Length: 415
Image (cartoon, rainbow, N blue to C red):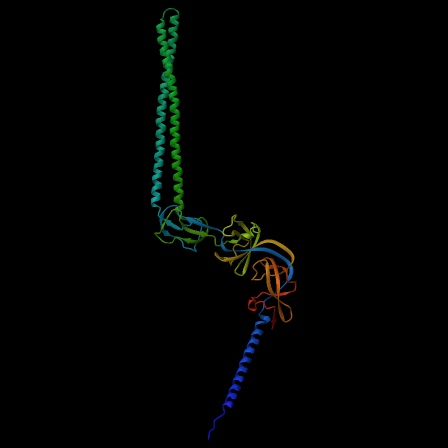
């Protein structure tokens, strides 16, 4: 026959089970904490990247950024408003100097040019007519002057004769006065004709010069129109690669609109920008080291813009090997411009998290089993090395990996 278990016995059994389960849970929690702490403050040596501190020269530099551009690039604009009739080449094609790229509709421009040619020919004929008319008019005046001169000579002789006759009593005073008046009138007429000839000559010269200037102006307009027509035959000015081109047949283009761009893709330069706080260190002629991808190309600063825009200075770098195989238009580049040389200083290889002269917290391997956190002051840097002002000595080995997961733990065990 079953009998009832006492309640006190059941309570003791339940408490015993709870104690066992609680102990197990506590042990698990403690083990987890200990394991987490050990994991967080220890690291495997073969997973670390260490660099050695030494003493030597640091070629200090200032850093900018930029992109690779063709050494030569030329924009070709439409010299007039028209439309595209034919497209001869596409982007990427290599063309020689003088190769046609596009065919524009030039019929209206050619008709206008021919019309101006006819106008110029007509103006030249008008000039010849003017010269002929002036020659006729001036010739008539010269003939009249000759006639007036002959008449004046005759009157002069007649006046002398009358005066002689009057002196011997064979003439009369009235006759002398009559001939003298005729002589003075002839003289005035002669002088008037000479003055008229001089005036007409000056006017004729001015008319011819005016017409000649009009012809020169028209001739210059025709030369410009001819040059415009030549430019409208869109051709490559030199051997290069077509970068862009208006490739829609029938597309309308306006005067001055870009219709093609050609570039020399065999040679390159780097267009860069840098904070204007480095203006004192950035000079034309400074050596530069350009990093494109994982490779470096040497060069020099070719030019620096004189004005700052939005806190940056623009500059151009001419490359020593401007045809290197890894160069491509548009590639991003880091540019290190040399600003001086510091000799025999404590240095470390350039680390990727270096952002400029300031204090850094770096882990140093003590050679035993720990990494020690040190407060290090770093100075100026070059593309290869950084100057160490304090906190490190030659022979130290510094961790250059991202150690942010350890926070500011003073020491980390090395497994």
